[in-house]
Image 1 (cartoon, rainbow, N blue to C red):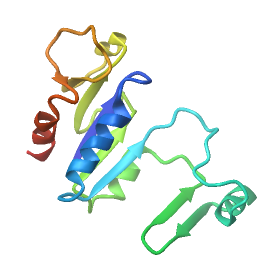
Image 2: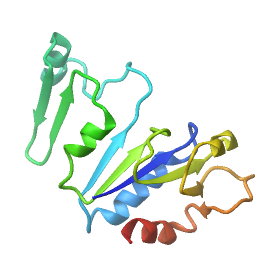
Image 3: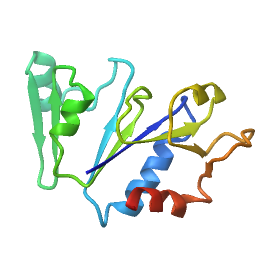
Image 4: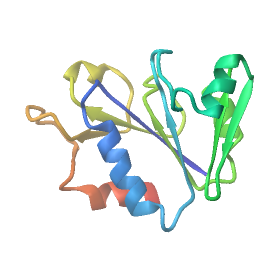
Length: 151
């Protein structure tokens, strides 16, 4: 299992880069995607549907089981390492956010250059047009990025 963290400022292009990588690599690899959400006011379910009703009624864990997928909502904060340890049978874990998470390969998606102060292994320039340092330019160098992940 390989772990890749993508972090950077809001609107830097993190989700776009990861979406492209998942599209390219998902035919060959089993991929887990973990998204860091910095606030609690989000719903992954539709208001009024049974799973939404049960989660809002106080169920600790709610599953939505469909013919081709299952959703799981847990009413607790889970540490990133615990989530990773529960998914060791996957080939690749893509993490979005968690700029302080130090395990695996770290990609800084450069938007705001203030993020250069955080540790990273590679810089990806997607939506930043002013940075002139060493970096992977997205989308032009997506094959280079795929090679880094696949090695």
